[in-house]
Image (tube, rainbow, N blue to C red):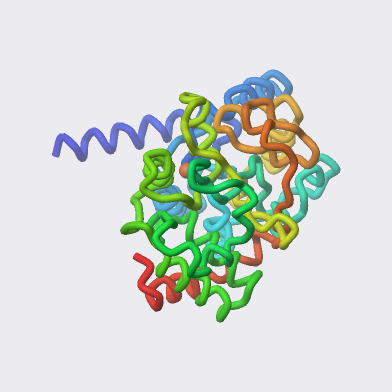
Length: 331
Ligand SMILES: [Fe+2]
């Protein structure tokens, strides 16, 4: 009973905060990442923006579906592209205006009708132990399915949005059959049972338990920032072969937004150079805006080729990806 009372108290507090705000954003990210943008938006417009943090995508979508037209929410900021297709399919989104500012984000990182626009970008790529390998030994995701990698590969459990997005992208890029054979090869090459998260893979590589793994670059960047002597290096996959697969955090405009112009303004403020660099630095992400250089250690990794598949398109293959994981026994 006490727990229920506390939950009601939290919800009503959030409701009253949201009710006072001019722009309300539901997010699964830490609002601190957007603090400079919020401050600038409020100074420019004289309006108040509130970012309401929720535990994950499910909490956000459940809340939106419960509140329906009564919601105060105008926008969402979510950490994985695969969820935007779901919001769109549920009829919860409308498009931002395709202004010149919006167009600084490459079209593959925006919804078909600008229902969502990326705020930051990440690569899901190789990390390796330089005692065992050199960068030139690594080439493509499909090369890691070759028997020469037997007993050397470490992977995260398939049950994560990061791997659903990656393999959904593979299905679009390589086709279903080839993707299946890549996953079968990966399973045959595992050094040990799949890991619960990306950081435990990086740790295992540092300890020499595996030679190579696939992770989101920012987990590696964060660990390398804390410990520059970490014996793990990064390499971008598929260079000269279509580019590394990317994903990112994006903002989407809800149909319930009562002031579309204000939401547009907030997105455009988040896309300014200053705020892009702040958003990027807070999480070791790459800026979403084309041509901007990050100002953290990731800038030392240099330029790299990104796969230009539309994030909107490859989220269509999620159920096929799920079936493939089951078929090949990728837990
Ligand atoms: Fe993450």
